[in-house]
Image (cartoon, rainbow, N blue to C red):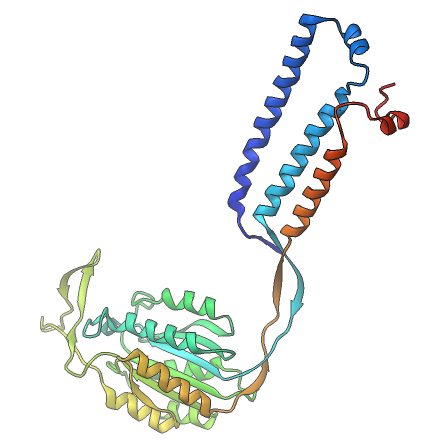
Length: 344
């Protein structure tokens, strides 16, 4: 396996054909100019030590040197080893509500974007914990399995939107069930399920799912976004509000945060509830909670360690430069004795 650090430098190879064309024209110009003064036989007598082969050899060495310098600038990175890392941490799965009510803008820019920023801020404070991501509305779907790749987690996090699931509602039951099943229950690591929602539209919620999570040693933390006063759900086209979501009676729907509902879930599981509107408070709270939880050792997934290889190409280029330094356009005595180029 390999990857190229800066492949844009490959465009420098365009100059090599230009050098070759220039070299050919230079040779033809030299031959044509020499013929104006004397014949080839006379020239060999006048310049017996002139080496036409070495002139071309120096140019070939120049092209080789330039090619290796370009490869050095590109910096190919080659995976030479597989590593298995032992870490200590907690398994955390973030379950984000992507129902339409999360588009309410009572918290800027809206509840869903606030939730994503909240999770991103928490991830920034993590060191060796494993994380996963679930999205849910009327159903729940996994977005990222348990991993230590925080970069991938942020990438998947940013892709979440309210169009991800066609069916609407807030099926907390399915989110908790999928979250529980996403953990490796055979491992002895402590496990946390983080539900981030406004707590609205909880369809047929059953406390049994929360008790099942608690039975399996999974604590549920809930963070509520939005405000109890509520807000309408905007319908936008190209980022411009065209209307607001309405119910069957053609009345504008006002979505309100249900903090009590989210609080009951966290209390039943032995977790905690917190107002998710203040990112700093949530990150500090979560950081302190993680300090209280025992860290267990686990083995991270094996990954390829890419190593820079530009040094090799630059060393070869340096060697070629050194060789070029000793290859003169005249027939040096020690090379003449060896008759390497059959020029005697």
